[in-house]
Length: 330
Image (cartoon, rainbow, N blue to C red; front, side, top):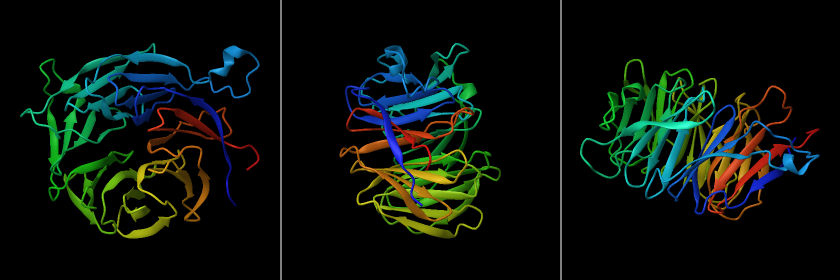
């Protein structure tokens, strides 16, 4: 049984350049691009069948953080509780943000590398409550900072540092229960670390080419990894065994995201295709081909209790934010 998703809304020219990264909170979508500003759209409205012209903007722009990354921003992430965000820019700066009660974001501070060198902060992920921030480096390390210790001088307490074999860290993820950190590297290496013992738990085989995305399933049982090999590898996080290969993408896979229940995995490709995979059936159940331009980031929006159907959003070289919703009755 395949599923059908409809493109319900687009925000053309949401950024003046490529949209490199998307992050979601329970009520907002944060987007980062090659331009210097971060943008925040509200996802609370979600009125699809508009009766008045006013309702035709289900995802209004609610905040623009102007000129915060001079050379643009390549990664942005949010904590699961939606209160903390972090963004990394092309000039090496790593900024931490806090969301106020009014839904407006404000800077907490900046974490600057000890030696002013490029490549100290690439891929980012925050823990569920936003206290821990993990960032990959150009030489395969993963720095874990305590965001509550960020000072105005640009320093933060480094909680721990994980070492791998020295290959550029292209992707990183933290399990929702906080027990594991995973990283994907340019040489195809994938590692899972145990956060309690702060030791390497598994070095995973299977992908020989750059790994652009690693994602733990919501229940932390599986790790999905994908990149230039054009396949999605699924691993059991306890045993480290590879349990499945999902094939079907014809180009590099740039981004992965699990839905809230862990039943479906979303993937976005360099050729603009989005695929949805069923974990149970281990196969692709839907493909969207609206765009031919690279999709740098794809994300499910958190499911509202009132919403019957799930929605996901894509961003990439087309500079457009595109929203898709599952068609009723499928």
